[in-house]
Picture 1 (cartoon, rainbow, N blue to C red):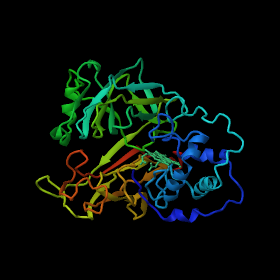
Picture 2: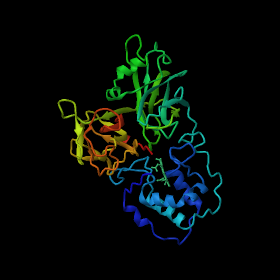
Picture 3: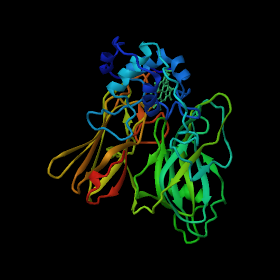
Picture 4: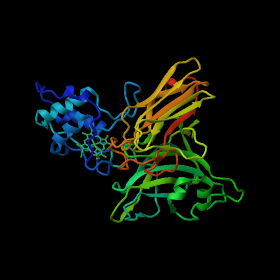
Length: 443
Ligand code: HEC
């Protein structure tokens, strides 16, 4: 069990104010909004907090984790930039929850329809998915006590082209599913998406060199013309990430024939055999999106001539940078910083041609276990001529409790995708800018 005490700001709220007692009906909306997306039957967290009894039973533990700021997990500095999918408690919400616990978890008038039916579909939305794309057969995770990485193909054929406004990854076996990055691909007419194998397992070598053409050929996704599949969408799931949803009129085009390719599906080490049957929920848009979401993943430039770039053992301040110039006006929707376990700090901002700073994100205490596709509250305009700067700092010393090596070792940087190597990515979901975008709410 990990306890990461992230902030001292929260101590102020642990006082003994019990003047007027708070009832369950007042704290339930807070818990529903800030905890239940993970703490529900079939949710990502190990237990549900949907009912009064669930909360009462764990109340002292809950008081502890909300006072220390360990729960809900939320890593960005909200003073730098706040986000639409912010899961953190406001000071007032935290105070109410603690006060309710301190005053003995009063039930008050029973809350009718405690569970509601918000999650009855199994989705984080109060809506049945329009399409479920599931692995064709359970993947048997070998009990080898090592990370396992696979590439998995889920084919689909629909009566018509459609448009998607939200997509949600639903891990099958929470004890081993670690992360997934995926693409939705359109293929040529003459490709049989059901032909070819369903998956392959990476070995150390293939994992270090993921190549589109190799994977597309392997899964028989290249048509007679030799044309490669076309990427319609690209995203990922990490523990703690919320569903990806877009405002009206924005989304992606789902071709009537194609595949969802989980390019990098990572399972945690297990000593006993485990099976996983993960799936994706897709929610169609009512209207055809006029605007198609773009996806950009940036990485730092390798300064070494031989391609090998290391974070030396005991270097507690290794820093990498991304600098990218924008040639067109764009509107940012989402931002996702990514590092592995040596990461300790991440910041990203844009500097406009007139030297204005557009703050994007700061993560003061990076935690590999809690990552997110952070959604801006409103679209953020980055004018042409701006330079995007990002800085990532890594701690490869023994004082980093997440260091996978004890004692610390030299670690390859920007080479491979496994947990023992390190990397820096800044992923952006964006649209070409249109007048008025900065007023469009993404809440
Ligand atoms: C993003 C998903 C997510 C949200 C939101 C979330 N939790 Fe959790 N919570 C988890 C997971 C996963 C665990 C188990 C792993 C761990 O303890 O790190 C957990 C563990 C806990 C634990 C046990 C801590 C321990 O060390 O065993 C408590 C208590 C808890 N959560 C309470 C809450 C409360 C109260 C809220 C809302 C105010 C909340 N959580 C919001 C995912 C979440």
